Amino acid sequence: MVGLTLVIILASLSESFQSSILGWYDRTLNADLVVSSYGNLVSNQVQPMHENIGRDLESLQGLRHGPQRSAYATRSIHFQYEGKQLTPESL
Image 1 (cartoon, rainbow, N blue to C red):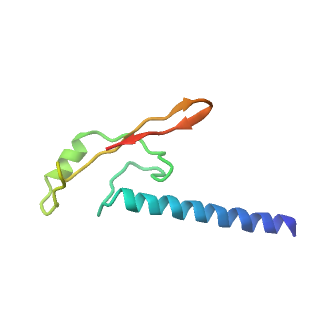
Image 2: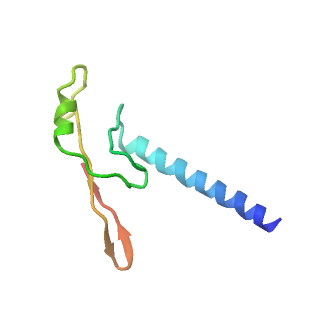
């Protein structure tokens, strides 16, 4: 019975965490389309893509232009600081 209770608690916690991360991405990356390489985008386990892909996407008709351009790229790096892994991201 204790095992079943732990499974239910962990599943609830996992679902709650995933929905909060996806909600954050929806608010932060207010985009109609997100293009990434194959992998888990939420946990940032994707391979880098070539910069020409952004230029190719900008040339498509019907894209609404933002303050600087219509296609934006994000970059991130993983590093250790005081025993913790940090992943800053930039646009």
